[in-house]
Length: 454
Image (cartoon, rainbow, N blue to C red; front, side, top):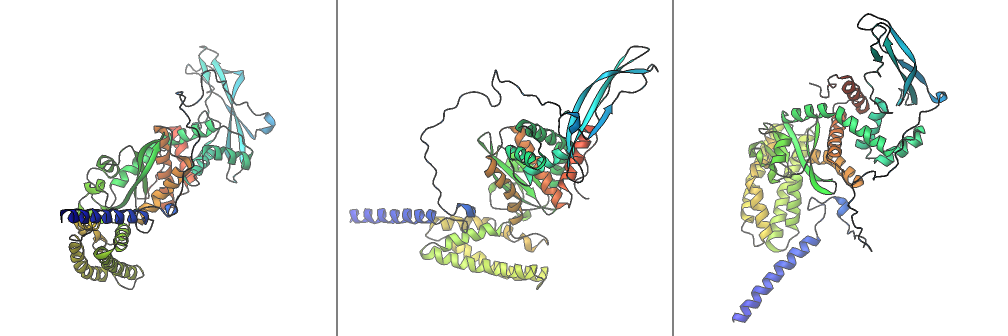
């Protein structure tokens, strides 16, 4: 008898293990957070050799011969601008200009999207009376690089809106404008734009913390192959992307502030518990995936899942009627309240289910039960986090194409350019014009242009 009981226990354990393994095999984008692209099995290619690290730093190695850009011939220059110092010295003496001058050439794009080349001739001089030396200056809106503000703005927009790599941008400029620049020039331009967008990004971050409602989400970010996290906070007015090494509550506070007072729509990830449950709207798309997963299980768990999906379908039936204008917000609340009274006992009964994962999932959902229905108490709140996921997906596509960033400064550039670009679209602003103005103001020592319409 003891042997038989032991065998029965072993069989039960094996059955449970088999059920879990079957469930793992059936995980797809419909019943989990996996993307649709992961629904098909993908096999990694075997590597015949493992490449060893050289131990050398990135970039040019000792002995590398530098390459400097040669000035274009005068026949390729569209405009010549003389940059001379003042005509009078502080002692009121006349300034005599030297005949020799330095040249600085800048490529840019005009209103017709045509490339032009300006040559700035910087003159030196000295006071005829006190012999004080003087030197002309480039226009305040320019820096010492070969690309003008508009071309820089176009270049970085190719990163945020079209997910192009530095080499792709280099090739595109060569193809469209016959402009041959180096990858280093692209990288330097990104660094300059990043500095110009630092203050607008900081202002945007502070504005995000003051919003009445936000959608938030997070995904992996790789910085020099080390895993970190990209966080997004967004609504219909703005989008803020933030890179951080942590996925914990410390990073969530950095994103949302210490005392976020609005309504926050997210999944059930615990980092967002810094916001009171009465201010939370949990994503019903994630809840639906859990219900589908439960319904695909055997015996009493599957029956529970079918019942849960029945209630979920009713909730979205009334939500869709509200969105189409068939019922008003008050009628929506009354209809959902009736469904809540049936759904809660269903979840409570599922806790005693023989399937441990079903029991655990339903217990967790019950813990946040009221947060599932915040959308019925505050008009304008959606029952899903689809907006947040759509906004962060733009970065996910970039990450898959670029494999992340190679430095902390690279991460700062990506979070700034993606945030500014997305918010410009939401504010009906021309992204290129806004970035161009930001560059000009930064170089001129002026405050950045307004991003958000008050």
